[in-house]
Length: 498
Image (cartoon, rainbow, N blue to C red; front, side):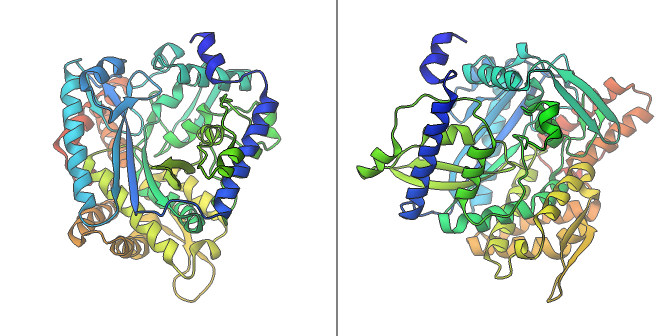
């Protein structure tokens, strides 16, 4: 990256000035909230999916630039690693046949992209973490050649002052180091956006935090990293460690990691933006001349570029997003909990479960966050990441009783959360046939005890028992996964024979 590019866009020398500007942006956001000038939500939801590129043998292929050139669509963009892509679906109104429309758009777009990728001898793989990745694949040389990725890498590594250590203790124990943030590119996710009013934001965010554990339990799809079987959703600890700017001393002092679940329920969107500014130093100090107060005084709407960029470098699993659309400010909750894949059917089932459940819990006159300490939401998230569909989760006792009970995730989801999700989708006005088709996938995962992670782990054990060594077994699992995913059937229906 040229020094002029950095000098033009970022102020790396005067961080004190940048923090002052960041606080001006916070003041501008507060004024917008106080004046109630936000766009009236139109029940808009958005969807983004990060993807992998692999060859016919299931090995990662560093050809995203060529594949993107062949796809030639603004719906597809680069991601951190040269074996990554991202597809963005335009916002939709969350009502009617939206789930069916999303499924059609995703299947059409991904099929087209896969045909173009095959011209570069690649195939598109929708999975949380590609099982065949090795440390040799995740190096600074294999980062996508774009200024922002290189600068982000340089800034995180400079803040740490030492190599990144990956230490994940699961079914097996992995310890390794990296000289760059490239391991982050192994984490491919689904991001779900929901536009909300400022008055509604806290309820939606709290609801999303409360169900993060259930989301992971149902949707885990990342059991392997660097030839090791780890957590059922190893993507979560991997991302946390790969983006960690703290030295061991700062970790020991209790400094918060940039990938952060949070530590409390909130009462306003401002709580999150304020915490992000107070707790986390700037990684990419943007140089921009906008004066938020001057824009507001003139009756305009500030874009708050420093705040939005800084907010994008604090990796909450449910992230607050500020934006301006058609001249009006708006707020979104961005849910970043779920891994990609395995199929469009599975992605839409996860999507329906999330939007329905968030709506039902946000509407509940007895909010779950008034009945469950925040620490239990985080405990559920950790348990689900470790154990996937076999996790046990804490949840408020049903009825008028008080206290929490711990139940298998499959039982909690089938008995309590799926009926809530169905009611929430009804409240959105989603077509009942689409609602039932998607939520039945979640119910069947519970009934059979199968999701993407458990299928991969079972297929891997079968490959080892057949006599394959570890690397060949993981490659065989990846190829079998790709073949079954191409057929489009939900993962709970797959056989695990290779």
